[in-house]
Length: 148
Image 1 (cartoon, rainbow, N blue to C red):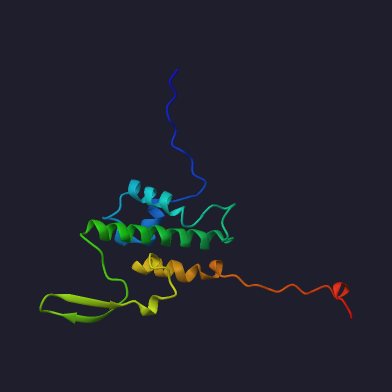
Image 2: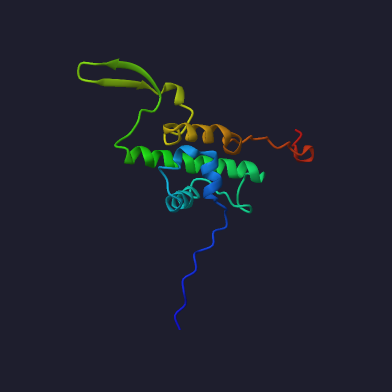
């Protein structure tokens, strides 16, 4: 007896219509199937599940995840449009042989992959509090001090 394959259930929620409502610029560029594939790939970068995510607030977790999917979609759309775009601020342009230079020195504190789109930059900025750590030195137990 042959069983029909059921679509694999994911433990995160990606709603294409909600995502397009937030980022309508992708409506003509990204199909629902492709957006779902992007969402699956983005799980490797950010865990949007309720159980394993470091982000406790469901709304914030969804916003971060949708931003990351938008970043991935923007990068893919850029590739399909015929090439890469500059990352950073344009600091020089010459017309003779068409040369453009950009300054990325202001982006030194951001991962270069995230710096390539405004969505990635927003994700990086909003997720900073989850990537930072604060070390608190333990208070030594006074009973363990050796008094000469």
